[in-house]
Image 1: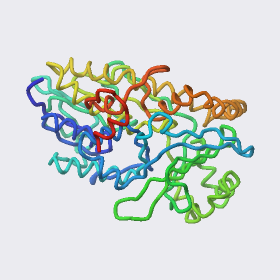
Image 2: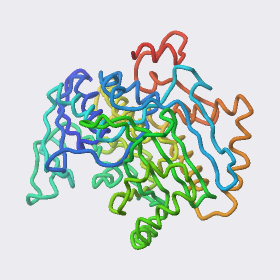
Image 3: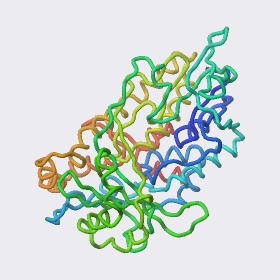
Length: 425
Protein backbone atom coordinates (compact mmCIF):
# COMPACT_ATOMS: atom_id res chain seq x y z
CA UNK A 1 0.00 0.00 0.00
CA UNK A 2 1.23 3.47 -0.80
CA UNK A 3 -0.28 5.45 2.08
CA UNK A 4 1.38 5.31 5.52
CA UNK A 5 -0.64 3.70 8.29
CA UNK A 6 -1.03 4.65 11.94
CA UNK A 7 0.07 1.57 13.90
CA UNK A 8 -0.01 0.80 17.62
CA UNK A 9 2.55 -1.82 18.68
CA UNK A 10 1.64 -3.33 22.05
CA UNK A 11 4.67 -4.47 24.03
CA UNK A 12 8.23 -3.16 24.37
CA UNK A 13 10.00 -6.51 24.40
CA UNK A 14 12.37 -7.50 21.58
CA UNK A 15 9.47 -8.42 19.29
CA UNK A 16 7.66 -5.10 19.73
CA UNK A 17 10.75 -2.89 19.57
CA UNK A 18 12.09 -4.60 16.45
CA UNK A 19 8.67 -4.51 14.76
CA UNK A 20 8.32 -0.81 15.55
CA UNK A 21 11.67 -0.17 13.83
CA UNK A 22 10.75 -2.22 10.75
CA UNK A 23 7.38 -0.51 10.43
CA UNK A 24 8.81 2.96 10.98
CA UNK A 25 11.46 2.35 8.32
CA UNK A 26 8.66 1.36 5.93
CA UNK A 27 7.14 4.83 6.39
CA UNK A 28 4.36 4.12 8.88
CA UNK A 29 3.42 6.23 11.91
CA UNK A 30 4.19 3.93 14.82
CA UNK A 31 3.42 4.25 18.52
CA UNK A 32 4.59 1.81 21.19
CA UNK A 33 2.27 0.94 24.08
CA UNK A 34 3.87 -0.64 27.16
CA UNK A 35 2.11 -2.00 30.26
CA UNK A 36 4.95 -1.21 32.66
CA UNK A 37 5.42 2.30 34.02
CA UNK A 38 9.00 2.09 32.78
CA UNK A 39 9.95 -0.25 29.93
CA UNK A 40 12.36 -2.92 31.10
CA UNK A 41 13.70 -6.33 30.06
CA UNK A 42 12.10 -9.52 31.36
CA UNK A 43 13.82 -12.89 31.35
CA UNK A 44 17.26 -14.41 31.05
CA UNK A 45 19.72 -14.64 28.21
CA UNK A 46 18.76 -15.71 24.72
CA UNK A 47 20.24 -16.98 21.49
CA UNK A 48 19.99 -14.97 18.29
CA UNK A 49 20.34 -17.25 15.31
CA UNK A 50 21.87 -16.10 11.98
CA UNK A 51 18.53 -14.84 10.61
CA UNK A 52 18.02 -12.84 13.81
CA UNK A 53 21.41 -11.24 13.25
CA UNK A 54 20.33 -10.43 9.69
CA UNK A 55 17.18 -8.79 11.06
CA UNK A 56 19.29 -6.68 13.43
CA UNK A 57 21.49 -5.71 10.48
CA UNK A 58 18.44 -4.58 8.56
CA UNK A 59 17.57 -2.02 11.26
CA UNK A 60 21.17 -0.98 11.86
CA UNK A 61 21.44 -2.59 15.30
CA UNK A 62 23.81 -5.48 14.61
CA UNK A 63 27.06 -3.84 15.64
CA UNK A 64 25.61 -2.74 18.99
CA UNK A 65 24.37 -6.27 19.69
CA UNK A 66 27.72 -7.79 18.77
CA UNK A 67 29.45 -5.39 21.15
CA UNK A 68 27.36 -6.67 24.06
CA UNK A 69 26.82 -10.33 23.24
CA UNK A 70 28.95 -13.44 22.91
CA UNK A 71 29.53 -15.19 19.60
CA UNK A 72 28.40 -18.82 19.80
CA UNK A 73 29.95 -21.28 17.36
CA UNK A 74 28.33 -24.49 18.51
CA UNK A 75 26.50 -26.68 21.00
CA UNK A 76 28.00 -29.36 23.24
CA UNK A 77 25.98 -31.66 25.52
CA UNK A 78 26.82 -34.73 27.56
CA UNK A 79 24.77 -37.29 29.43
CA UNK A 80 25.73 -38.32 32.94
CA UNK A 81 26.84 -40.51 34.60
CA UNK A 82 27.90 -42.29 31.40
CA UNK A 83 29.75 -39.28 29.97
CA UNK A 84 28.24 -40.07 26.58
CA UNK A 85 28.28 -37.11 24.17
CA UNK A 86 24.76 -36.19 23.01
CA UNK A 87 25.60 -33.13 20.88
CA UNK A 88 28.81 -31.74 19.47
CA UNK A 89 27.58 -29.46 16.70
CA UNK A 90 29.26 -26.50 15.03
CA UNK A 91 27.71 -23.89 12.73
CA UNK A 92 30.81 -24.37 10.57
CA UNK A 93 29.35 -27.69 9.39
CA UNK A 94 27.03 -25.53 7.24
CA UNK A 95 29.21 -22.47 6.63
CA UNK A 96 32.28 -21.08 8.43
CA UNK A 97 30.70 -17.61 8.47
CA UNK A 98 27.61 -18.75 10.36
CA UNK A 99 27.32 -18.26 14.09
CA UNK A 100 24.81 -17.43 16.77
CA UNK A 101 24.92 -14.60 19.28
CA UNK A 102 24.10 -15.19 22.93
CA UNK A 103 23.04 -12.00 24.65
CA UNK A 104 21.46 -11.03 27.96
CA UNK A 105 17.92 -9.73 27.71
CA UNK A 106 19.01 -6.50 29.38
CA UNK A 107 21.52 -6.00 26.57
CA UNK A 108 19.21 -6.79 23.64
CA UNK A 109 16.58 -4.57 25.24
CA UNK A 110 19.07 -1.71 25.40
CA UNK A 111 20.11 -2.26 21.77
CA UNK A 112 16.54 -2.27 20.45
CA UNK A 113 15.37 0.49 22.80
CA UNK A 114 18.11 2.75 21.43
CA UNK A 115 17.20 1.74 17.87
CA UNK A 116 13.59 2.82 18.50
CA UNK A 117 14.69 5.99 20.31
CA UNK A 118 16.97 6.99 17.42
CA UNK A 119 13.88 6.88 15.19
CA UNK A 120 11.92 8.99 17.72
CA UNK A 121 9.18 6.40 17.92
CA UNK A 122 6.79 7.61 20.64
CA UNK A 123 6.22 5.35 23.65
CA UNK A 124 3.27 5.45 26.05
CA UNK A 125 3.89 3.57 29.29
CA UNK A 126 1.61 2.25 32.03
CA UNK A 127 -0.90 1.14 29.40
CA UNK A 128 -1.93 -2.52 29.30
CA UNK A 129 -4.19 -3.12 26.31
CA UNK A 130 -6.95 -5.55 27.29
CA UNK A 131 -9.34 -5.20 24.37
CA UNK A 132 -10.03 -3.45 21.09
CA UNK A 133 -13.10 -1.35 20.34
CA UNK A 134 -13.86 0.31 17.00
CA UNK A 135 -14.50 3.86 15.90
CA UNK A 136 -17.17 5.00 13.46
CA UNK A 137 -14.95 4.08 10.52
CA UNK A 138 -14.23 0.58 11.87
CA UNK A 139 -10.65 1.36 12.90
CA UNK A 140 -9.38 -0.38 16.05
CA UNK A 141 -9.39 1.57 19.30
CA UNK A 142 -7.03 0.12 21.94
CA UNK A 143 -8.75 -0.13 25.33
CA UNK A 144 -6.60 -0.05 28.47
CA UNK A 145 -7.19 -2.58 31.24
CA UNK A 146 -6.88 0.03 33.98
CA UNK A 147 -8.19 3.60 34.25
CA UNK A 148 -11.80 2.49 33.80
CA UNK A 149 -11.14 1.08 30.36
CA UNK A 150 -9.63 4.25 28.93
CA UNK A 151 -9.76 4.32 25.16
CA UNK A 152 -6.67 5.35 23.26
CA UNK A 153 -6.76 7.09 19.87
CA UNK A 154 -7.91 4.95 16.97
CA UNK A 155 -5.28 3.52 14.63
CA UNK A 156 -5.28 1.70 11.31
CA UNK A 157 -3.58 -1.41 12.67
CA UNK A 158 -2.65 -2.97 16.02
CA UNK A 159 0.37 -5.24 16.42
CA UNK A 160 0.24 -7.55 19.45
CA UNK A 161 3.76 -8.22 20.76
CA UNK A 162 2.74 -8.84 24.37
CA UNK A 163 3.98 -12.41 24.56
CA UNK A 164 2.51 -15.76 25.49
CA UNK A 165 0.11 -14.20 28.01
CA UNK A 166 -1.55 -12.03 25.37
CA UNK A 167 -5.02 -10.80 26.31
CA UNK A 168 -5.76 -10.03 22.64
CA UNK A 169 -5.12 -13.51 21.23
CA UNK A 170 -8.88 -14.34 21.21
CA UNK A 171 -9.24 -11.68 18.49
CA UNK A 172 -7.24 -13.82 16.05
CA UNK A 173 -9.01 -15.70 13.32
CA UNK A 174 -9.15 -19.27 14.70
CA UNK A 175 -7.64 -18.53 18.15
CA UNK A 176 -6.05 -21.28 20.23
CA UNK A 177 -5.68 -21.96 23.94
CA UNK A 178 -2.04 -22.30 25.08
CA UNK A 179 -1.10 -25.72 26.45
CA UNK A 180 1.35 -25.39 29.36
CA UNK A 181 4.36 -27.69 29.50
CA UNK A 182 4.77 -29.62 32.74
CA UNK A 183 8.46 -28.77 32.75
CA UNK A 184 9.96 -25.30 32.99
CA UNK A 185 13.29 -24.12 34.34
CA UNK A 186 14.90 -21.91 36.92
CA UNK A 187 17.64 -19.57 35.76
CA UNK A 188 20.23 -17.22 37.15
CA UNK A 189 22.90 -14.86 35.83
CA UNK A 190 26.37 -16.07 36.83
CA UNK A 191 29.99 -15.13 36.07
CA UNK A 192 31.34 -16.72 32.89
CA UNK A 193 34.87 -17.12 34.25
CA UNK A 194 36.26 -20.57 33.51
CA UNK A 195 33.62 -21.43 30.90
CA UNK A 196 34.33 -21.99 27.25
CA UNK A 197 32.89 -18.76 25.81
CA UNK A 198 31.98 -19.87 22.29
CA UNK A 199 29.42 -22.59 22.91
CA UNK A 200 26.23 -23.46 24.69
CA UNK A 201 27.01 -26.38 26.99
CA UNK A 202 24.57 -28.76 28.68
CA UNK A 203 24.51 -31.80 30.94
CA UNK A 204 21.68 -34.34 31.13
CA UNK A 205 20.63 -37.12 33.43
CA UNK A 206 17.94 -39.09 31.61
CA UNK A 207 15.23 -36.65 30.52
CA UNK A 208 14.35 -35.44 34.02
CA UNK A 209 17.45 -33.37 34.73
CA UNK A 210 19.04 -30.80 32.44
CA UNK A 211 21.62 -28.17 33.33
CA UNK A 212 22.85 -25.62 30.82
CA UNK A 213 25.30 -22.72 30.70
CA UNK A 214 25.09 -20.08 27.99
CA UNK A 215 27.80 -17.37 27.93
CA UNK A 216 26.01 -14.10 27.08
CA UNK A 217 28.76 -11.47 27.06
CA UNK A 218 28.27 -8.32 29.08
CA UNK A 219 25.29 -6.36 30.35
CA UNK A 220 24.77 -2.59 30.14
CA UNK A 221 26.90 -0.91 32.80
CA UNK A 222 28.76 -4.14 33.61
CA UNK A 223 31.92 -5.21 31.79
CA UNK A 224 32.21 -8.59 33.56
CA UNK A 225 31.45 -11.46 31.14
CA UNK A 226 28.29 -13.24 32.25
CA UNK A 227 26.53 -16.53 31.55
CA UNK A 228 23.00 -17.77 32.08
CA UNK A 229 22.56 -20.96 34.08
CA UNK A 230 19.30 -22.84 33.58
CA UNK A 231 18.13 -25.89 35.50
CA UNK A 232 15.18 -27.89 34.22
CA UNK A 233 12.42 -28.88 36.61
CA UNK A 234 8.71 -29.48 36.75
CA UNK A 235 6.79 -26.30 37.47
CA UNK A 236 4.81 -28.22 40.12
CA UNK A 237 8.10 -29.08 41.86
CA UNK A 238 9.24 -25.48 42.21
CA UNK A 239 7.75 -25.04 45.71
CA UNK A 240 9.64 -28.14 46.84
CA UNK A 241 12.89 -26.69 45.49
CA UNK A 242 12.29 -23.52 47.50
CA UNK A 243 11.45 -25.48 50.63
CA UNK A 244 14.54 -27.70 50.37
CA UNK A 245 16.80 -24.66 50.26
CA UNK A 246 19.78 -23.61 48.22
CA UNK A 247 22.20 -26.18 49.69
CA UNK A 248 20.06 -29.06 48.41
CA UNK A 249 19.86 -27.49 44.97
CA UNK A 250 23.61 -26.95 44.87
CA UNK A 251 24.22 -30.62 45.73
CA UNK A 252 22.02 -31.73 42.83
CA UNK A 253 23.75 -29.35 40.41
CA UNK A 254 27.27 -30.33 41.42
CA UNK A 255 26.40 -34.02 41.36
CA UNK A 256 25.53 -33.54 37.69
CA UNK A 257 28.34 -31.11 36.78
CA UNK A 258 31.04 -30.86 39.51
CA UNK A 259 33.36 -28.60 37.50
CA UNK A 260 31.05 -25.58 37.70
CA UNK A 261 31.32 -25.12 41.47
CA UNK A 262 33.13 -21.75 41.04
CA UNK A 263 30.40 -20.59 38.65
CA UNK A 264 27.57 -21.15 41.16
CA UNK A 265 29.52 -19.94 44.20
CA UNK A 266 27.58 -16.67 44.19
CA UNK A 267 24.17 -18.37 44.23
CA UNK A 268 23.48 -18.46 47.96
CA UNK A 269 19.70 -18.12 48.08
CA UNK A 270 16.82 -19.68 46.15
CA UNK A 271 15.55 -16.13 45.58
CA UNK A 272 18.32 -15.84 42.98
CA UNK A 273 16.68 -18.60 40.91
CA UNK A 274 13.90 -17.28 38.70
CA UNK A 275 11.21 -19.67 37.46
CA UNK A 276 10.38 -19.76 33.75
CA UNK A 277 7.22 -21.46 32.47
CA UNK A 278 6.60 -22.60 28.89
CA UNK A 279 3.48 -23.24 26.84
CA UNK A 280 2.72 -24.40 23.31
CA UNK A 281 0.39 -22.27 21.19
CA UNK A 282 0.44 -21.71 17.44
CA UNK A 283 -2.12 -19.46 15.76
CA UNK A 284 -3.13 -20.96 12.43
CA UNK A 285 -3.68 -17.42 11.20
CA UNK A 286 -1.62 -14.88 13.17
CA UNK A 287 -3.99 -12.01 12.51
CA UNK A 288 -7.54 -10.81 12.99
CA UNK A 289 -9.49 -7.78 11.87
CA UNK A 290 -6.84 -5.05 11.74
CA UNK A 291 -4.63 -6.82 14.27
CA UNK A 292 -1.41 -8.79 13.69
CA UNK A 293 0.18 -11.13 16.24
CA UNK A 294 3.95 -11.52 16.39
CA UNK A 295 6.40 -13.42 18.57
CA UNK A 296 5.07 -15.47 21.46
CA UNK A 297 1.62 -13.93 21.07
CA UNK A 298 1.44 -15.81 17.75
CA UNK A 299 3.60 -18.87 18.41
CA UNK A 300 4.92 -19.79 21.85
CA UNK A 301 6.75 -23.03 22.60
CA UNK A 302 9.54 -24.51 24.70
CA UNK A 303 13.03 -23.03 24.18
CA UNK A 304 14.65 -26.29 23.05
CA UNK A 305 15.70 -24.92 19.66
CA UNK A 306 16.61 -21.45 20.89
CA UNK A 307 14.73 -19.72 18.07
CA UNK A 308 12.08 -17.71 19.92
CA UNK A 309 13.44 -14.15 19.71
CA UNK A 310 14.78 -14.69 16.21
CA UNK A 311 11.33 -15.83 15.09
CA UNK A 312 9.75 -12.79 16.74
CA UNK A 313 12.00 -10.34 14.92
CA UNK A 314 11.42 -12.11 11.61
CA UNK A 315 7.67 -11.69 12.17
CA UNK A 316 8.08 -7.92 12.39
CA UNK A 317 10.15 -7.81 9.22
CA UNK A 318 7.64 -9.98 7.34
CA UNK A 319 4.71 -7.83 8.49
CA UNK A 320 6.39 -4.64 7.28
CA UNK A 321 7.17 -6.25 3.92
CA UNK A 322 3.63 -7.58 3.50
CA UNK A 323 2.15 -4.15 4.19
CA UNK A 324 4.45 -2.69 1.54
CA UNK A 325 3.57 -5.31 -1.06
CA UNK A 326 -0.23 -5.52 -0.74
CA UNK A 327 -2.91 -2.94 -1.66
CA UNK A 328 -4.91 -3.09 1.57
CA UNK A 329 -4.69 -4.23 5.19
CA UNK A 330 -6.70 -7.49 4.93
CA UNK A 331 -4.58 -8.74 2.03
CA UNK A 332 -1.40 -7.63 3.75
CA UNK A 333 -2.28 -9.52 6.94
CA UNK A 334 -3.08 -12.66 4.95
CA UNK A 335 0.23 -12.28 3.09
CA UNK A 336 2.08 -11.82 6.40
CA UNK A 337 0.61 -15.07 7.71
CA UNK A 338 1.58 -16.90 4.55
CA UNK A 339 5.13 -15.51 4.54
CA UNK A 340 5.80 -16.85 8.02
CA UNK A 341 3.65 -19.99 7.98
CA UNK A 342 6.12 -22.59 6.74
CA UNK A 343 9.06 -21.50 8.88
CA UNK A 344 7.02 -21.16 12.07
CA UNK A 345 5.12 -24.41 11.67
CA UNK A 346 8.31 -26.42 11.20
CA UNK A 347 9.95 -25.04 14.33
CA UNK A 348 6.81 -25.31 16.44
CA UNK A 349 6.46 -28.97 15.48
CA UNK A 350 10.15 -29.72 15.95
CA UNK A 351 10.21 -28.07 19.36
CA UNK A 352 7.15 -30.02 20.50
CA UNK A 353 8.71 -33.23 19.14
CA UNK A 354 12.10 -32.72 20.80
CA UNK A 355 10.96 -31.39 24.18
CA UNK A 356 10.15 -34.82 25.68
CA UNK A 357 13.70 -35.96 24.89
CA UNK A 358 15.06 -33.32 27.28
CA UNK A 359 12.22 -32.54 29.68
CA UNK A 360 9.98 -35.46 30.57
CA UNK A 361 9.47 -38.31 33.03
CA UNK A 362 10.12 -40.94 30.36
CA UNK A 363 12.61 -43.62 31.39
CA UNK A 364 13.45 -44.73 27.88
CA UNK A 365 13.48 -41.58 25.76
CA UNK A 366 16.63 -40.23 27.40
CA UNK A 367 18.46 -43.50 26.78
CA UNK A 368 17.31 -43.51 23.16
CA UNK A 369 18.50 -39.89 22.78
CA UNK A 370 21.92 -40.74 24.24
CA UNK A 371 22.42 -43.67 21.89
CA UNK A 372 21.24 -42.07 18.66
CA UNK A 373 21.76 -38.30 18.51
CA UNK A 374 25.53 -38.05 18.40
CA UNK A 375 26.23 -41.24 16.39
CA UNK A 376 23.81 -40.03 13.71
CA UNK A 377 25.99 -36.95 13.12
CA UNK A 378 28.67 -39.20 11.63
CA UNK A 379 26.54 -39.09 8.49
CA UNK A 380 27.61 -35.78 6.84
CA UNK A 381 24.16 -34.98 5.42
CA UNK A 382 22.41 -35.59 8.71
CA UNK A 383 25.00 -33.60 10.65
CA UNK A 384 24.54 -30.67 8.30
CA UNK A 385 20.78 -30.97 8.58
CA UNK A 386 20.94 -30.90 12.38
CA UNK A 387 23.02 -27.73 12.28
CA UNK A 388 20.70 -26.08 9.75
CA UNK A 389 17.79 -26.84 12.08
CA UNK A 390 19.65 -25.59 15.16
CA UNK A 391 20.63 -22.44 13.22
CA UNK A 392 17.00 -21.64 12.40
CA UNK A 393 17.43 -22.08 8.65
CA UNK A 394 15.16 -25.08 8.02
CA UNK A 395 11.79 -24.80 6.33
CA UNK A 396 10.89 -28.48 6.55
CA UNK A 397 12.49 -31.91 6.84
CA UNK A 398 14.44 -31.41 3.59
CA UNK A 399 14.15 -27.70 2.81
CA UNK A 400 16.30 -24.80 3.95
CA UNK A 401 16.82 -21.10 3.28
CA UNK A 402 19.33 -18.36 4.08
CA UNK A 403 19.53 -15.79 6.88
CA UNK A 404 19.08 -12.71 4.69
CA UNK A 405 16.13 -14.27 2.88
CA UNK A 406 14.34 -14.93 6.18
CA UNK A 407 14.99 -11.33 7.26
CA UNK A 408 13.51 -9.96 4.04
CA UNK A 409 16.82 -8.76 2.63
CA UNK A 410 18.09 -9.31 -0.93
CA UNK A 411 20.09 -12.52 -1.25
CA UNK A 412 23.40 -12.68 -3.06
CA UNK A 413 23.56 -14.24 -6.46
CA UNK A 414 25.02 -17.44 -5.08
CA UNK A 415 22.84 -17.33 -1.97
CA UNK A 416 25.63 -18.51 0.34
CA UNK A 417 25.49 -17.68 4.01
CA UNK A 418 29.09 -16.41 3.90
CA UNK A 419 28.33 -13.76 1.30
CA UNK A 420 25.06 -12.72 2.96
CA UNK A 421 26.74 -12.28 6.33
CA UNK A 422 29.54 -10.27 4.75
CA UNK A 423 26.90 -7.90 3.34
CA UNK A 424 25.52 -7.44 6.86
CA UNK A 425 28.95 -6.44 8.13
